Length: 187
Image (cartoon, rainbow, N blue to C red; front, side, top):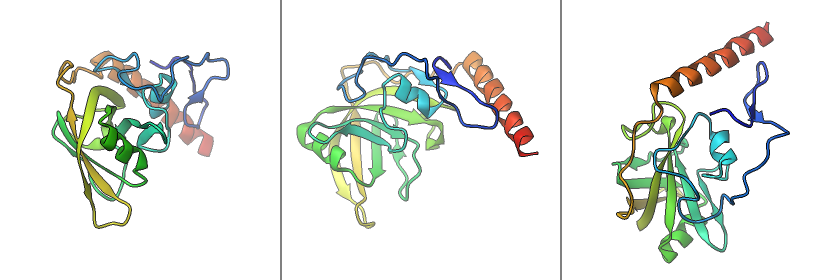
């Protein structure tokens, strides 16, 4: 779960300098070697395992190909609407989504715990499969759009078994260690 991640007292997790990077591209289309239900404790781990290649933005892709993945749970002005196999995703700087809509490409969907949806994991981030953009709606806020994405029918349903009890225990133990060391560092 934490392979390749370094932990320092009082700091956010980071990459280990000695970690061998994955040869896959985060900009590859399709599942990119992932299985629906794969789970990661931190957003950094989604980047490490090349399911989503951006630490700051909820949309990942290439200007000439369009969006290849979205990460739900990013905080923005407009709330995403999550009905499991149908999502209404909102964002700004959505040129990659526009191109994905025009080309009809399938997009990887990663749900984060901050999503607030009953379909989101209780902690961390979970890969929930490939979705296709069906429609686009402009929102009143300048530059914001809402995209309706529908889960591809040629795949298994969302597996909401992750995180498991053991994964939760390990995640909580690690976060308690980080928190206790942050408070010690402030003294």
